Image (cartoon, rainbow, N blue to C red; front, side, top):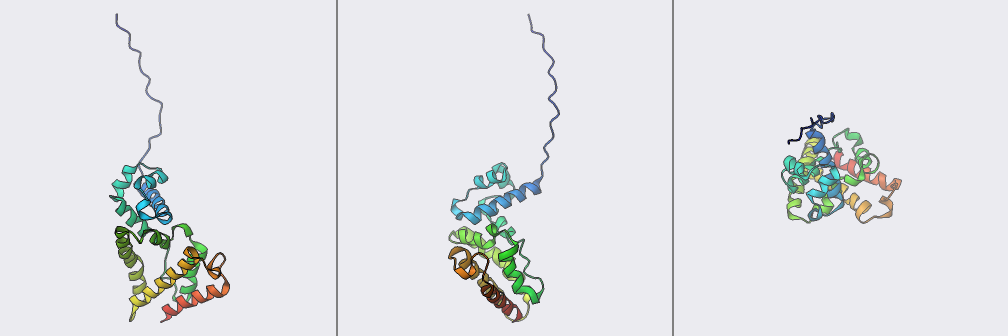
Length: 195
């Protein structure tokens, strides 16, 4: 005796989940910026980044190829919020504002540099990307003789300020920055621009 087959009801309509590669990449980059700015490069895993982004780890490899590729893309994208080529007369005030007022401090490029500079693979990427994303655009914007040297001076001032605000906090640079210290940093940056 054979059993009569019972017709199977079609599954209820489920919303079709559409892939959104740009959104997935953006989530991975945001998670990578956070991870690389909080932990040393060797201790950040692609699985950790993918889990934080809420995506399958295979997507990270699909879009970025490797941990190094993801690091490079995350580090390069950390410069996106930094338009350092605005009005010349307000450059110093603008840059200090980026550090103090307007930006998510947790994912500043300098945090990523701090956590990755000791690793040989990451440090090479840092040198190459910082040159492309910061030194060259600023030097081109500055123009004139010694533009690259002046761009390097701007970065050195910014890195020094970051060091003594975040890594080795000095009272005049911590929290709501002392007005005199802020005026000094704005003036020092502006002096480099003004030549």
